[in-house]
Image (cartoon, rainbow, N blue to C red; front, side, top):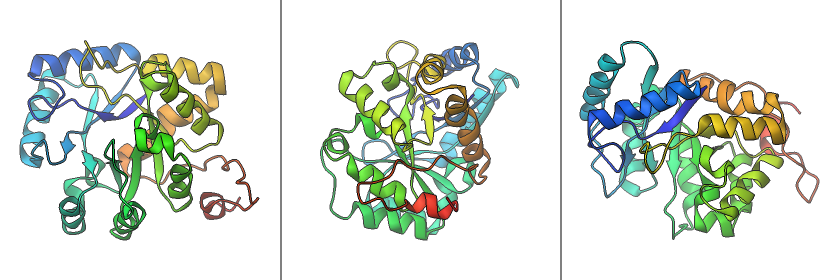
Length: 258
């Protein structure tokens, strides 16, 4: 499996505090069958985002892992004016492995009116936004139709592995399941922070997906799509979105010729 949202770099945000914590997370992921991880430190007002430090510390981790797992680098990109301005000038500073995909996180308690315009600006920079864990965001939980609107304009959606297992509560689990039923999910990732309080949980989520949606869906969300994101490739054909109330085909469906 490929895990493309993961707080692995030690000492830079609310993830691991030391390299031993990072290595413990990696061991947990290896045990789950994860072969590739994208380290995604926060890029927001609370944590200073320093690409050079992130790369150096990831390299230190990579040396200790000794080839047992493949590591990449991106960020957990928070929507702000400064971040978006910088993205236009230095997109590879933030994108997954310096390529075309960007993990985008919204604030928990405010959904600015200009959010759609901000996402448009990101796409205009040649970057594909991957909206992270909408099933855990209180604002999006109250306005789930926004997720569909953004998918129809070219965004992707990532839900958290532990949400599928009920670890974030029944409401998050229900929304994650509903998004899956409507084919509005493209990636499942762990958003792991610690083996003690935010463990990877990819294997548990993969098993839930097989049970509830079938192995083809599980592989698409945990292997095929995140693999494309890791390597900066175009996603394979995706299932058609469940028809909207007006019966119109979605943007994604038209894009894929369905």
